Image (cartoon, rainbow, N blue to C red; front, side, top):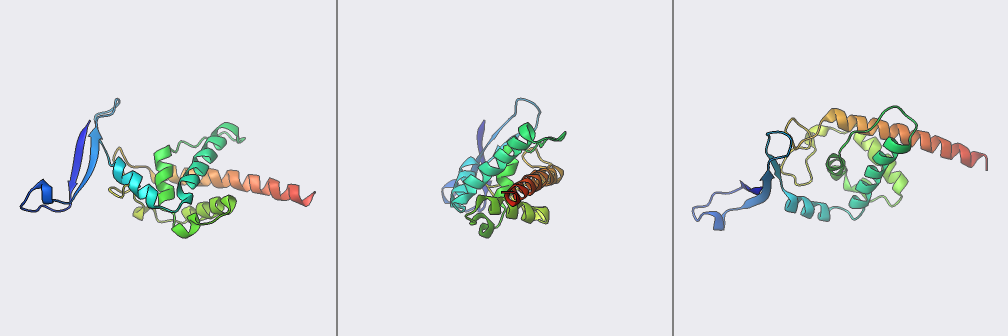
Length: 167
């Protein structure tokens, strides 16, 4: 593991005067492709998001877990936690500000269903979320996450709505 730098300026004075984004790099246990990561920038950008951001990420990770372990289906959601976190990072703040968790969840799914993934960044904003590198995600996997969670949400909402009609 070592330090990784992205220079935004190259002043004559050297590193002391340069604008640098610092990250880290390491070799994974499996594979030969070096992983480049910017954890400090990632953490700072996540902190700057609306206060519902982290809670919303947890909601989506818990929904993935619930789908895989309790929802009556033959499918599973293979979306990794980092991909989910980055996906939610790209949701407009106006949606994240929603107080109602269920409204927020529903609006995020609706937004992501029609979203243009080409503009989505990782939380560090140092690399696109989707692509072919070992730190990027597949749009097919993201689409699968959205479709499966919508399926679960509609099933739950339908049952809940019908239950309310009979009470």
